Length: 235
Image (cartoon, rainbow, N blue to C red; front, side, top):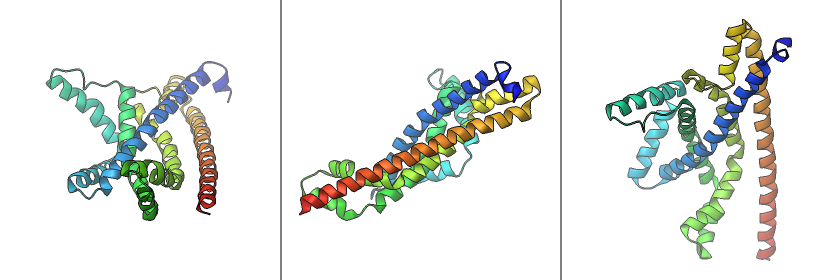
């Protein structure tokens, strides 16, 4: 691995890894928030809410992320030119965040919907019976319990997004894969740089996995404590 440490190759790779983490850190929270909104719409009794959400989820999940990246990056810019506005011309990094968040929101929506539906309906009814509003019952009682259920699949998607972020390199974002390809092409060490990039992706993925296990453990402890408090008050 001397080719990594005898010059600036490692620094460049770490810079790319930093951009990969930034893409993921910015995109995943947005995906969860939008996914929660989509899940709420999907569960609505009103068709004017549930149908658009269902259509969005199916279209996004049925088309490749790479195609979505190209469409947003190039098509929006062309539309902006036709409308004589620069508001639709996005830089590559912003486009990457939007595309990753929009794509994964469709998957998070189904995960969150399953989590919300897994919470006993009696929990919501009990919350309403003690005077909480629908919004309070959802935010204080239902959502935290659903979140405990969906942490493992959310972490799996976080790791998947971390790896899928390499697709954003096609529009020139200097993330890890882009840096590895550039250095490998410049120095005729493509195979070695791909191995180095794979190692860094593995390290970041393992860090996400450990974060997920930590959150899962904390939430289980918190849930057990809340259950104990409820039992004490019940007696």
